[in-house]
Length: 493
Image 1: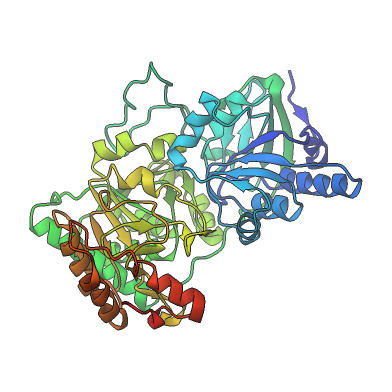
Image 2: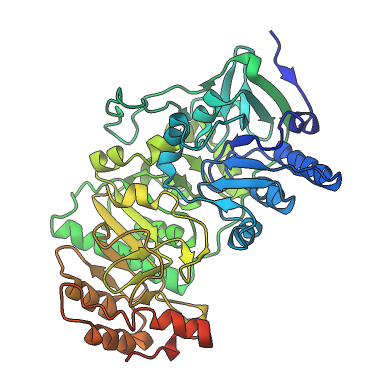
């Protein structure tokens, strides 16, 4: 039976007002583009006719502008989960134009199978190949694709010719078993394969839309002095841990978050002659990892997406056989699986929006109320990691915001899960330290020198007890910024 083929506009008409739609991909990688844009145009047309048209959105993580941006601008979103980075969507969420709920990325697929958030009516999947018997081969981002294909009544496949069919074989696709029948994952080494190279779907559910579009990725900002120094501090810390016998001489698999700091850290690890060649078990494989694979500094990389710039993607496709031997793309519930993280002894490195002097981390909310992106996969890795490390420049906004504050305005990771904090000024190793000892280390080693006197004054003002907080002054930094635009004007009484 031949698969049904449609245009993007025709496929968009298969989606109804109030449907819940699942999208493939993880970051911009692997995201459909033509059908979401057509869906946004349809929503605008419905609105002009005076009819309601909004959908619920499930994604692997953040997406490209053709999904999050286009659908937000078309006022076509009913709710959204679990993670986003789009500026238009961020503004809409913070303006309370639609509901958004943040989730640990590893949990969404199973939550959908449990029925926690309602049905998945339609799945829209970007693929490099689809066969007549229903084998769908994703492109470079997996996320929650197998689960939404399994649950959806309709599966719209964007068959994107920009990605070669020869990608088949780079994926390891399966789903964890649901309770009470769950066994261990079967992953004992970074490179273990446990699933299939495709997603199997009933062909009668599939509609194919043929496209040829590049990824929507952009280049990362170059390494600057601050991010370079953070990377050097990380590398020096690892060397010290190896010399002290706290990290094996063979090293351990690493996970790093998304963005410029992560790329700077990876570059510093690559440049360090005292750190051996390593493996990567992460969610997002970035440009720096690709360069390290080519140089031999990374031996193998497992993730849920190839979130790279388009020039880097060209490099991958020119050497595809090389990378298929050294890269696996998994579903998020395996790439971010805490059981695997604990088993493999992964070193987790993620970025903090702000940290307080006792080691609590805010990854998500500016001034406590305005969402930035979301918790992403940082929690999946942090609590189960061999070493959980958070990275942050000491200041932002030209020094008017301190990343280190008396008390975080929102808590994503508590002090109990945070082992090490690193800024451009140094390393605070919090293992085995009391709250007061943690505070002294963070102030002295990580905070910007201009803010250290204020932070010390706050610590000295703390109530006697296990954790020396002063509730009257706890948000003095935030209050000063809201009132004057500069945390340096904080008054500690």
